[in-house]
Image (cartoon, rainbow, N blue to C red):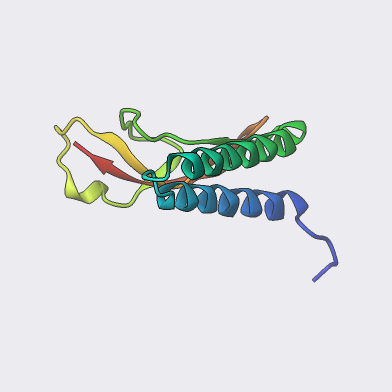
Length: 116
């Protein structure tokens, strides 16, 4: 090894894992406790904003394609694409990992699940 560290790659990996942790935490919030759920949701939004603010000066941003119509060639791999026919109208149901974009294009592709 030549001693160089891919700091951008490390930051992108940390950003993707942070995004995944936020998603998992958001889904685990107990909405029956309105006061606590609101506080926890605010904490997640604050962390996500801090993550965006950290990536932005480096020209990086996280892209979540959830809910968008699926188009072949999207910067994310559809894990269940083989479950559908070519005539099906598909949408991105769930992002497993987000897309990370840089100033010069895609820095890391995402993974997703599709639905009709």
